[in-house]
Image (cartoon, rainbow, N blue to C red):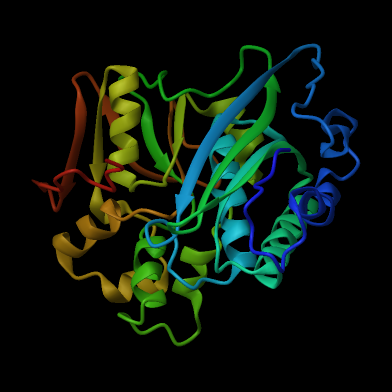
Length: 316
């Protein structure tokens, strides 16, 4: 793992930071070489494919400025784990790149590493390598996550077929409402909504049932409609969604008001649930529509078409 050489004078040097912050996060994985090399060596696992996904987060864009460093670290891991969950993959390890602002001091960096350690232990992840640099801009993070699936069994966005059902896990809209709550724009007396935004729960519990029964899947990060559209595009089909069938938390149900409110919840991001298709209902998921011949996503409420625009977050 490489390091920056222009950190503030009161911080340990690059190798000291690596040794103290990151070496413990390898959890003794021999393929990481104690982060003393510039590369890791990943052994093959007979009968399995290595699944690789990557997400980046920027302060002020993907998390609020001034957020607790340990929560930032844990969210970074979890949004990548959500991608593995949608692929039906078993988490394995990760590579990390961090661009530190000069005002991100040593206690803040220690707290960030502590967040990685907590979720690394919880999800059985080893840090395998990466890079640290400094930046005059906001805190910028990039993480590459690795996981294993039985050979040829990764669940793709392609695979949905006419006649399939469209299903979703958990509840929809809480992450989007949680951002408003975290900004103080929405009442959140018990902190539930802000918690859903700050610390999502990747649906790794669904890996086995998805692998057995889903024809296509994606995690709901950009917004339910937008991520359903990704499946439609990759599969060459049309997904029809019924807003009245959305699974909602009590908080989201109280906020929503008619078709416009439901459409907003279905277009919000940061839920990190799973939207998938399959030929029959999957236990633990809610059926919200079906798959037909055609293209794109069709959204209805009370039988009428609803225009949801982009249906979610646009990265560029």
